[in-house]
Length: 193
DNA sequence: AGCGGGATTTTCT
DNA sequence: GAAAATCCCGCTT
Image (cartoon, rainbow, N blue to C red; front, side, top):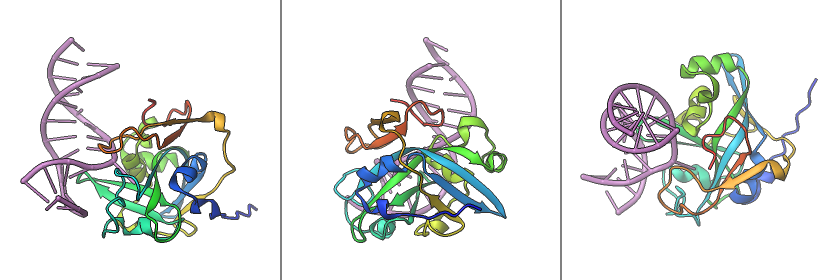
């Protein structure tokens, strides 16, 4: 019997501080009675001081969740077809969060393959791919990650020496800000630059 | 292996 | 009305 104590206190730090601590943590999704689990391997920090963030220009209908309490899920829709998810960080009222860009399948891989009609690294080596395999959509914007059917299971911090830091992907503003973290050498990382 | 375009709709100017 | 925290496919080298 495993007793899991979800300790989300660390999520109240700044997005930049929290991001590398999320590497190695488990994201669990209950879907039709099946359990899917992935290990987070690539993340990016965003906050309201950052021109690339959805929260930079203040609270909007879309970005509202990021201004809420830490430990909730911020799901946004983009490019007319994709969902991406963030873990909200920091204090209530300050718009910040960590984009989950890539993860490694741990349990339920066969279901993920069905959800995406792909296999191997293509299952989860990108933010919209991850949402697709876990069947995460707009309904889960604001979801509390300490509760079913989507839970974050914190893990002890991984060795600093196994973490790489680089610039963020796919943005046009604040391109030079190195707020992206990933597990060095993990095959599910979307881009190694 | 790398480039370019298309899909498709929300969001803000 | 254009751009967007993306992904996939087809074409070129």
